Amino acid sequence: MKGLGAVLVLLGGFWTRYLALEERRRIIRWGEELYRLLELLERGIFTLRQPLPRLLSQCRERAELSVPFWTRVLEGLGGGFAGSWQQAVSLVPALYRPLLEPLGASLTAGEDAELINLTKEEVRRAAAEERRQLGERGRLATALCLSAALLTIVVLL
Image (tube, rainbow, N blue to C red; front, side, top):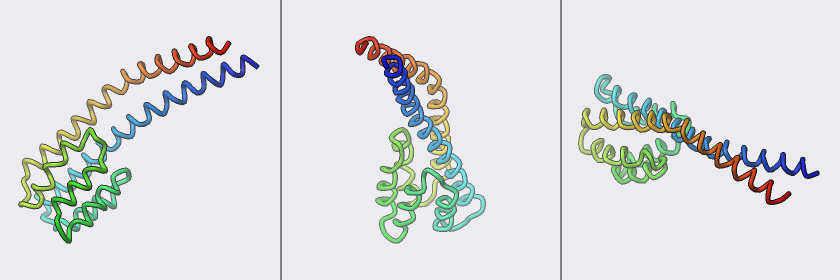
């Protein structure tokens, strides 16, 4: 019976590790998706000269994780777009919020190609850095969860 309890505690430790790392992977996927959709937005505005409502709709259609963000932005087209953009940015993971905030005012005042490109590249860089750190975090999470599980087993035995 003690052996079964020990195995269950170890499984709980590894489950905790999985959940901690899965959250980091989700943040990375958010950044990669934002990069891809900002690239679509940039190309649509400056190369294809498409209207902003159509581009935002295309971004929402191609989004997976960021659908609520693009939906909130689209809702703001009828009124205060910059305010709506700021509200939508609150739905984005904290890592990318400061990068996206200035873009709303830029899209309202007249598109600035350099700012959109800079924002896109900063989002890509942040996601790449997060991916690089994921390996280190994985090792730390494994050590922490395994140590906690083993300590719990020793205390309970």
